[in-house]
Image (cartoon, rainbow, N blue to C red; front, side, top):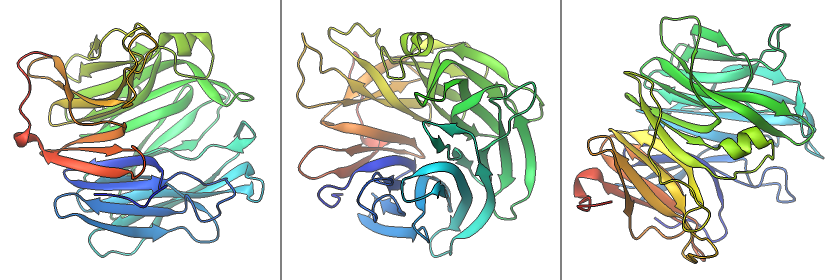
Length: 351
């Protein structure tokens, strides 16, 4: 499924062949970019705009599960220069023809790089988890993870975090999230760690250090680990590697190749579902030039092996679950979504 020329995706979420995504551009000179949520069904090739934020606000990081879609709408106190505290609201919509309605709202006042920080979202069935700024005396960088019923809006539980949340994922009532210290001037997090909040408990357990983006579905956790970035406090990916763990034991193990900077720069943007983890693998190195950009890699819990799926040139984001593998290519001149049933994929005999 092709997208308009020049359309740049920011983040996406998938459920089977259905994908929701937003657009980069909010805060630039293009005042129309980054203000709408889009929905695609790769099984029938349909694409439509689901919603547009009112009053010049951003529409941000949509998530989908079953018939439920949620996203964040937000604006800065100075929405001309895109600075200051951030006023937000969580919006939800029921597919196929429901109207958007507000589930929660608030203001995040702590500034990072001169800007307030938007909430994070994750959805699973009829539950939605989101973050809201929640500093305390003992946790001045803390946030609160709130879980609500999507339909009724009732808050079912919450957790105060020790540090600032970087990434978060909800599945089966449990929440996995990464958190870390904050360089407020440089606008990045460091000395991060992966935490797991099991349903029915009031505290979270540490799974691993130096974690950034997190994916979680079923019993499989997948995340980006980058010790050099986390401990070096540089604010940029250095040697990002994909790790996985089962919720049965929460023991980390590498899924992607060891990053050497010679053949492989590392893995980014993990997704998880149906016992698989997927990610974008960057192999364009000085000694191993690969002008086709990142490629799609899928890791299988049954074999504990990672396989490269082709053709997937120009890949940036992917999703897996409910019987489908989907991915987005930013390959010029036309960006596009692709999808295939998992049953149609023949894994190679060797990785």
